[in-house]
Image 1: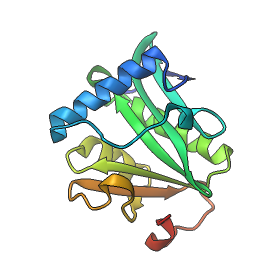
Image 2: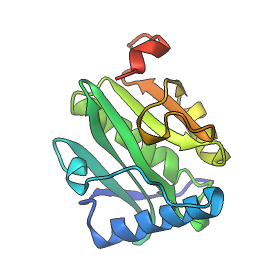
Image 3: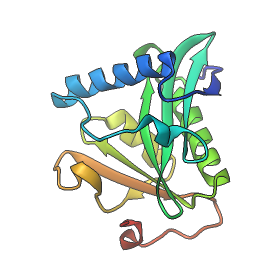
Length: 167
């Protein structure tokens, strides 16, 4: 079942974005016992450094996600979330495809992300989208629950060696 969602770019501090970000943080509390402790500077999600999108279905906030520059030619996906009532309707796939497209358009060659082993729905989405395991990074680099994935942006690019993702 698919849903017609509209995507719009907003600031990370936008009230709708903040509501959805708080919802994803609560999801982390339920699944992992605590909020995501990774430091996020809202300015990192403002063009040209990054982008934050909100998905709306019939004017109702349904999900969000963003990317921020992570290093030379690399962007990091953050705060991907879809409200429970809108899951399994294609909203996450639509958000992910647009985040990939805009990151590539901004000159990034790779997209990285950090998820967790208690998010099977997210891991399945990333697997379907062609993400593969990469070296850990950041504050969760050594966490046994953390899952690090990456993808080359652009279909004509060859798959990188895992070591090429370390930055």
